Image 1 (cartoon, rainbow, N blue to C red):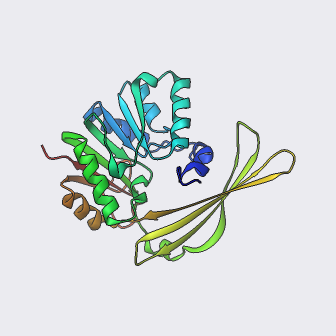
Image 2 (image 1 turned 120 degrees about the vertical axis):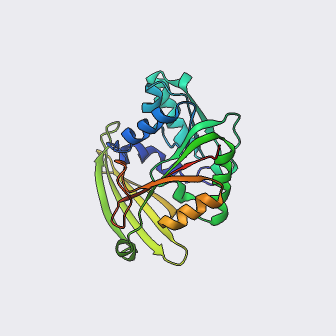
Image 3 (image 1 turned 180 degrees about the vertical axis):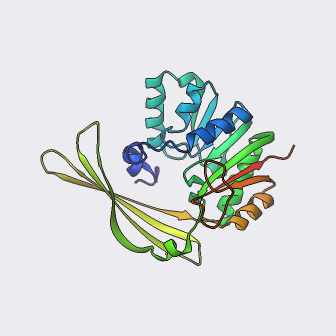
Length: 257
């Protein structure tokens, strides 16, 4: 992690860590079919969701604050021959300033939770509204906070998973620590990535970050205050009705016509 790239330390592990995560893609592709191009992804990372949309012929803009994440995304797009369908931009979504307006904007995998303060959230939502066409759709993909689980977040370091890097053959052990601040609704998270090479040399990367969690009606009020019309809140990518036990909290909102 550097001052210029707060997510740079994690970028090289991102695709490996999320390998096999595709359960959100059918939902996203259905929304893309409904709304059409152009499409905007907020906090696009290394392009996990951009590539499938581009392969289906959509014109997509991906925005991310991390140059390291975007460099990987560009490499993946170049290898797939999809550079003409995707525009990648390094910007902070709170200060989004693009030339185009979009029919669909989305933030996946808790990306909006990196907006820690109310000002962050409202600035980001206002910026997205400026870039949506009338009737354009915004999707916020968040987790449903479980109080019992949150109370277990006491800062203990636990082994999350072990992975084999297909590029180097090295074994990577991912540890994670989570500590919750109930008053601020913030989880302080630390990933510790231990990479063991064939000669037994261990390289450790530490990546701390914070996530703001939201409750259902708080999120609805936030979207309404920002000028959006709420369409639905789903509890899964299968569009199940949201409930207390739902694993996800997926808000679908519209820019007023």
